[in-house]
Length: 138
Image: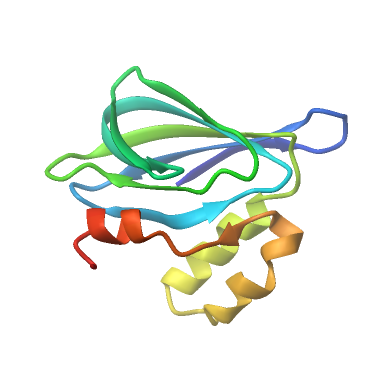
């Protein structure tokens, strides 16, 4: 993950980062944002994405907008890598959330810190039977 830029100093600011996913790698579980619209631009490879109750595959050059309150999830498509540019607007200091995710993945922080930060970072996890089925988790 490469943190590119964030600005919440002006109305309509943004947060932007780029993520590369190894073949078949997990991305984010089902979640939604209450204040931000999330934009996806696939720079390379293929990304499997849940939006609401529908799962689609985005390929290189595809663009997706996910409005607030819309459950979504993503992962590299089966058998594919993915390189994706993410943009959130309006912006808020989301880089601290991304850094927290990294610490949790490395075992340096407790996963419950993610749940405790939901309001601060506008990232609310939800259950999605559709996404669980897509991942083969029943």
